[in-house]
Amino acid sequence: MKNFALIGAAGYIAPRHMKAIKDTGNNLLAAYDKGDSVGIIDSHFPNADFFVEFERFDRHIEKLKYEKSTFLDYVSICSPNYLHDAHIRFALRSGADAICEKPLVLNPWNIDKLKKVEENTGKRVYNILQLRVHPSIIAMREKVAKADKDTKFDVDLTYLTSRGHWYQTSWKGDVSKSGGIATNIGVHFYDMLSWIFGNVQENVVHVHEKDRAAGYLEFENARVRWFLSINSKYLPKEVKDKGQTTFRSITINGEELEFSGGFTDLHTMVYKDILNGKGYGLEAARTAIEIVHDIRNAKPKGKKGDFHSFLS
Image 1 (cartoon, rainbow, N blue to C red):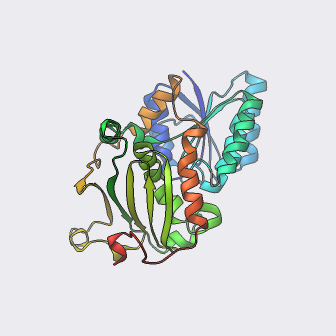
Image 2: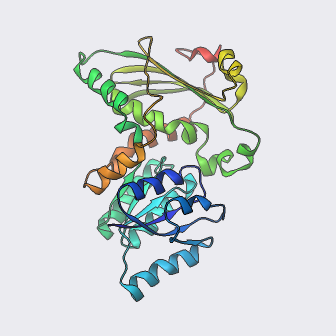
Image 3: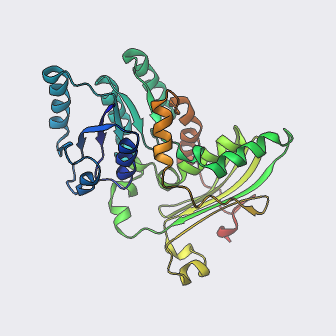
């Protein structure tokens, strides 16, 4: 049984980490979040100590080490994007490996600095790249690998997930904290696309606003038109008529890539890989971080070139 601590316990994704820790037969010793709406812990680890002040959380970890000879093996990080770098450093300095949600960090150079911390501490940083263990995604990657090397697949990525006014008031609406919409809701898909289709050859941004972004990515084996939005007005009529608030579509050469099912246990699968000495480290995260960094800093070109149909 391994000992875990968790940072960001009140966040949306934290329950999946708690479930993964429990499902893999391990123990959560302590959790931290500045918000105290964390009753979800009762469903997984009711005896875990909880803190709303980071300083007390830090002191507790030290006391466990020096007074009870109880050491952390892993720190799971589910905090806001801009805090990932600092919390990863805390984990490694505490003698634990870090398991961090996406985006791992906001800038490519943060990865380089974290590599030095890994070297100095002898500990590892792992990123939750759960789409890479989804059976449909794995099957698609194998299909692309078997195609001719010069083959270019045509891909349209559309992801609409409605958010209310709270979004812009929260840290997610602050580009300096979330990285903007492409980072906050798109990084999962950019990682998936680069994992399937290879290195990036071109990255064009057509539109980048607070509630929508669109662009064109060319990989070794794909031409990708992408559109992301948190504004419900872009939802297709048939989706609105059903009362749904989310629409996700990835078509490859005109065929829908079906991967809507099978999401429940992906985090647990990633945790199992990490605990078995596998898992995705710092370099695995680099391409997606470079993509979102470049999108964030690009000058949008408007509706020019090969753009997504939703821009029409």
